[in-house]
Image 1: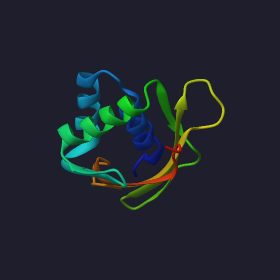
Image 2: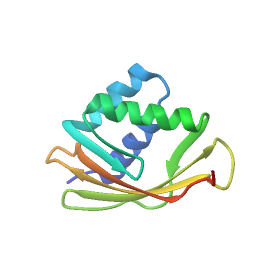
Image 3: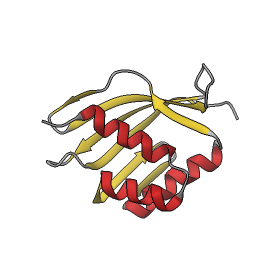
Length: 122
């Protein structure tokens, strides 16, 4: 049985890792070799590209922390969850998202489909 909550915790840890080398290792451990990530702003495949997207998001929102936005739900090879991003220690998140991840038989991510529910006004 897949530990869906554990997958999401590791996913959020990758999004919070600011050291590029450490983040690359987290991404490589969590995603399959040909894994992908798609949201309204990016569609990439492969560990290097996924790590670069995370780094770019961190550059857009320096000091933001990604946290779970509620319960994790999963079945078969799917896990869905909401997440929040904002400055550490603040109440209201600046960014809110909803992701669905497809997992392989070992619980590694093959694809993430991301949605942005709340983004800052430009």
